[in-house]
Amino acid sequence: MKINFIIGIALFTVSAQGAILKNKFQFRSPRPTIVAIIDTGVDIYHKDLKDAIWINEGESGLDHFGNHKENNKIDDDGNGFVDDVHGWNFVDNSHDVSDENGHGTHISGIVQREFKKQIMGKSHASSLKIMVLKYYSANSKNEKNLADSNRAIQYANKMNAHVINYSGGGYQSSGPELRAIQDSLKRGIPFIAAAGNSQTNNDFKSYYPSSYCLKNMISVAASDQRGRLMTFSNFGLQTVDIAAPGKRILSTLPQNTYGVMSGTSQATAFVTGLVAGLHATQSWSRFAQLRELILSRGKFHATLSGKTKTQMAILTSERF
Image (tube, rainbow, N blue to C red; front, side):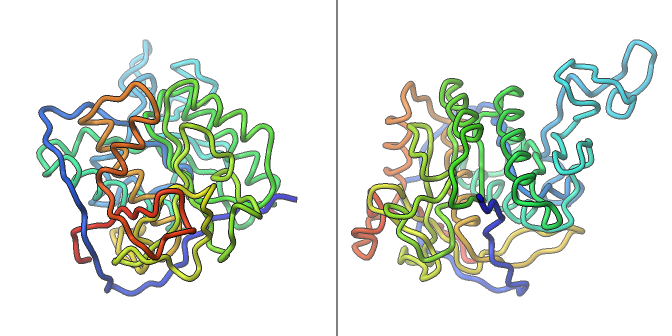
């Protein structure tokens, strides 16, 4: 049985540390960038996130009867989902993408913050849009969480997300999951996935989806603010690409609050924010070029030898 679960470790205090980010880059006018957050939902009304929430144009505005499309109970854009203005709740099969858990809201705050840093300021921050895809519930059986995550990936593909963040995983592969991510590959969508929090070598015990190791996938381990691998983080010389901060990361929580969490979930969000910034400001024709761009913004760390493919860590210049 595959255990498919959210892997952030909640520590609800308000202090954390930062480290170093190398090689910010120049840009002109950033392209609109849609990031699909496949998680526990998002507080779309949080003061720090509300302006960055994706709006499905096919489900906004007025219909031909003069009713608001966002709540007219009609599938106006014909995509199979009714009133999916900001994404979809696959747990309850509804358009309510609220976040009772807090994990997805925390991840979204990290992605947004890192995106802003990559585009060097707030003036173009509105070019980031977060597509909210709620798949996980602690009350659901593992099989349902997995099925819902597959549907969420398919939705992100269908609705033209530019980057997918997946901060979860488990130890059994899934054919539908693999096929959904292969479709992401065909569509040119980078898929950023957590390596896991079990102190496990993924080379010998695969952790999915990150261990599918497709060309469009970046598997992320968690480091401290100096780039040293966290003791809880999974690793793998052949299966884990890079490390990023995952220790006591301060970010947004529901109801306009904030707190810190630790995990490869948070590390994944750092890399997703970077990739979203690269999408907004750079061009690449092959995923190998994207990897080169990512690594050019990383820092070599000797302690990652034998732990990741690159021995590189993406760090941050902020002190939280």
